[in-house]
Image (cartoon, rainbow, N blue to C red; front, side, top):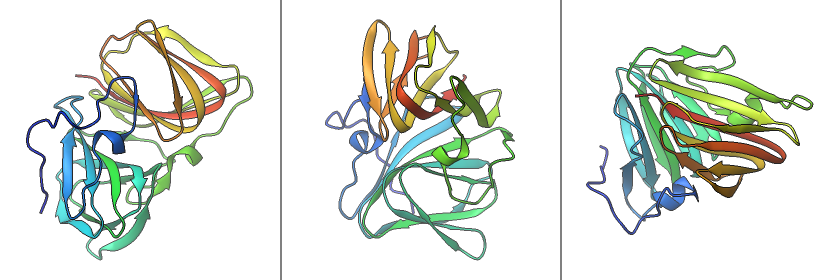
Amino acid sequence: MRQEAMGTDVRLGAMDGVFTVAGVRPARDGMTISRDAGLGSENTVTFFALGAGTSISRERYDMTSMYIGALGEAVFLTGDDAGRQSFLDGDMLIVPGGTLCGVESGSGAVYTEIIIKKEINMNNLVKAGEVMKLKNLIQYEEGSISNIDIVSNPTMKFVLMAFDEGTGLQPHRAPGNAIIFALEGKAVIGYEGKDYTISAGENFRFEKNGLHSVTAAGKFKMALLLVIE
């Protein structure tokens, strides 16, 4: 059964500037703990931390769920046959609604769970129910920025982007709250007049209508979760 974190623990890391999911919601021995990321209500985004030797029993959601690995190794058990799949940082798993799904970790793990409450459009590159390495789903294009929508609906979008060296996005504003997942390389995030360097394994959050830009420092890959509510 899930153990839900109640309220906000001010001792946990903040999501101001560059952060890591594991820093915001570190694992604790013998406990499974969750923390709402506060991105929206139509799509629930939660940070989960499993202590060593802990698990979350198998259950079914009526809607699609997504998982993004942040730190450590977990094992997901999916389907009626409880098929086991190793799940590491930078991995993604999409579980269709109505599918039995549980998770366990021998050494401890941290990941992001995204519950998508409305029907989604899913890219043909993605195989539902199969763990995939996010950075391998998109390739660099010479002198360009490549972009792939992984899943989307009118209330959310999860996108992969690959920036070739010397490329970037000019300052702009987005119509919802968002989190960046840096997957490979480094970049400079400009946000409301300040610059932040982000590296693979780190995250950045910006608020709805926050002015932001992305400039690759060499080659850079990232995922973007945008919640439009």
